[in-house]
Image 1 (tube, rainbow, N blue to C red):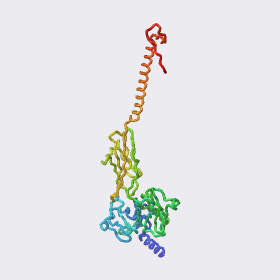
Image 2: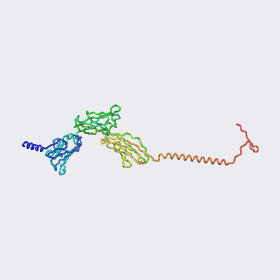
Image 3: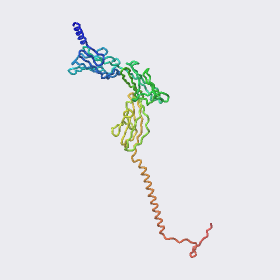
Image 4: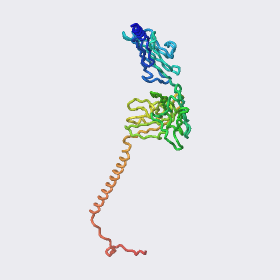
Length: 390
């Protein structure tokens, strides 16, 4: 019987000892539960890009628990210590207390284990790994007419070489096709040694925004992306020299722009800023460039002029091209026809008058009496005849 009593006391002591869980979600101490919900990184994920925001929400099933606090890698976090860190204590219902953590513009230093704890060491945890992907841009010289080889890079920190796959590269939301070739051989090459993309024979069509995709290895794959720019000063292809538009019709002039970045696209008419009214005159996007397409409806004679497209960036680089738009009278094609018709009418009138007069003259001649024929018999006359030698 004493042995049974000792066993019962020992069991009671074991139940009273706090039990803590190392998994995401919380710990349990005599019915106290602490839950950490991860808003960013998303639930089930632990990697986040440097520069983004960590957002965590913690809830304990104790009302007005003022001792609830956050730690990172064992160090207590205070909102006032770091400018981008915000910790807010929220009084919940009569049965729980909440606190939120929001850390903006995080760096590699914010990697580690976040704990939400009360004074009795009941805790919930979230492991976060900050990954730094540094883009290395390339630049295409717009003044060169020959193709150029360009290298873009994504430098990955926060993940070891064996923690992610070879990078994937995308352009215009399409994955780079390594099988694509140009006249001199392969168009692209991707290196896992320095996480770079080489573009062989790059031209203005290759300028724009690229994306490198980092796929983590492990039980749960995560995708991290970073934009990389291939830069070029603004460039505009030539317009046709002019356009002839019939009065009352519409015209669309597209400004074919190449370059990255292009921050501003404006239009001028006869060197004066063109004002779009949104109804008859509209400026619309064209190939991802805002205001690069000019549309004018119901053209009239005052719309005739030289229209110039002007593209520029914040660095002061710019390009422009101009086109002459003529407005033709809607009846312009009719005037030559009417002229021909008038000429035919006048000619017919002349012919008619001439024929009428000729017919009248003929009729008068027919009505005159016939004349006697001339003879050489002049016996009864005093006229002498002379012989003429030939």
